[in-house]
Image (cartoon, rainbow, N blue to C red; front, side, top):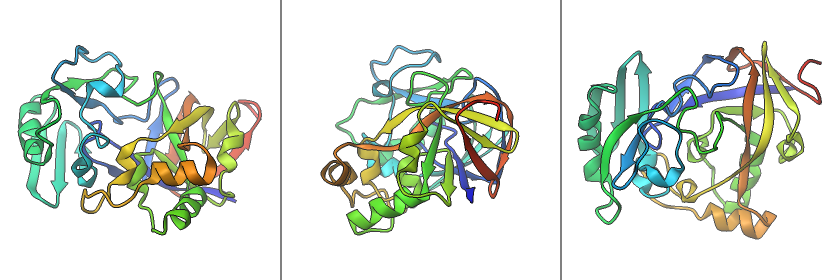
Length: 249
């Protein structure tokens, strides 16, 4: 039996992961509140429309950001990092305060974090469509065994984690539909990983080279899949999951 083992969202792209027990998905949108904001770096031109990752600060550029945790309650956002005092801000109004907060843990040799951007319903996800990422605990365990480490889910910045399937079964899901509760998601493509996975979410320090591990063991750098919500509905941790060839089984 396949079940949802965890739900995560990332209110500010690259700055903090937030665990959830349930969330209401909406057709054609990313997971609500996920990547709702992003911090544009020097030279970025976007004002909220979707733009590629290179325009924003993120864990691939600053592993220290991987240790940020976040919670959101309406416009109020709380941020925690082991090397910084806790921060509570109203977003987007106090975006500059968030930028000031991350500056001491952001590399000086990277383009300067410049301004907070409010995303559309698409969210500032890594894919050029309103994606919701789905990942497998079994695949994470197998990857961890190859790396010689217990890999925290937060390394992968995913949304929906599933337990109860065989490792790498998700590679066969492209073009299929995942039903969770009343929600249905169409699996579109694989998720190619970046250096953000190298950093430990507890400390922000690089302690793995998972791109090399993926490449040397499986011949690619993919982990997890991107999906699109085709039918909205509430999903919860513990929900049973069904895989179908058609949107309406």
